[in-house]
Length: 193
Image (cartoon, rainbow, N blue to C red; front, side, top):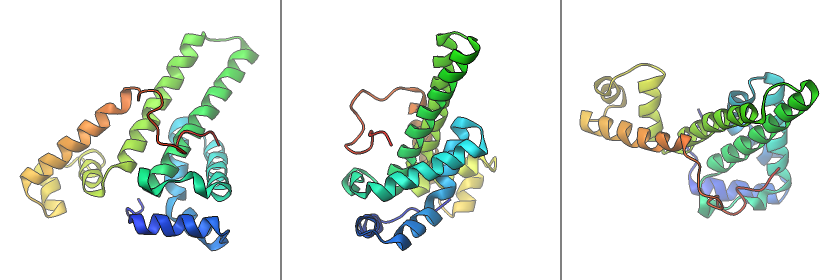
């Protein structure tokens, strides 16, 4: 995963994109393309659809650099949120088209599938947006099956700190299945691509 970018980097990147610097887009793509693709793939389950979402997200960022507000969060967080929204929108469209074409499934099934994909994408978004120390502890616990003692040793922190990071990370992650209040997205973060 890409290292968390400092806010200064985010502002400079936005300024470079606003000036139309193609090199800035390339740098942004190098930093976040794997994040965008993996989030989109998690929702859509297809490489080709994730590739398309990746192109759309970076196209949107290129055309709308002013939609990013550094005061609302990191560029990484913004790009992840754009990806989540676009992928869920694409899933809704694909499922609705399949429903109309085949007449199969109920609208409740369609909505349940979209809700599951949205929750998974939201969980990914929460993990990628959380501070690096929390994310590192969760990744050790879940991807490498480390307990808090092993995570503490791997991260060179105290066991109490490892427990605290895991607890905070899990508390943040537990919100993935809850729906955020309407209108709670920061300006520029909820606009469709």
